[in-house]
Image (tube, rainbow, N blue to C red):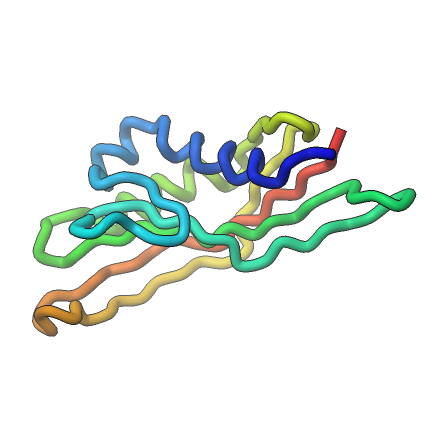
Length: 139
């Protein structure tokens, strides 16, 4: 049976291997939680992961990834450019993962919000990105 973690790794790899995104969000790409001290980074989480069964086993998976550009306002980072780069990389992209046929990502929704920093309320955490669905069929 195919390992769902291979799908996660394929999406993360797509983001990690883009030098433009690295330049815009140099503190890295993280799954679920960013490293302490990160101020300009990409954050990926799973918001849903429905499966489709066929003939008594899992035939398809449809994880939905929330992919966000996160920038602390005082860093001078360009949140708009970072979010646009994430969308350019993911919306319509085809990824390959061991145990699955090539699968395509598509954006379901966009996300945009700003939150005060817990240490200094005059600083804002800017967040932009979207939810991307990956519909993958097991081989």
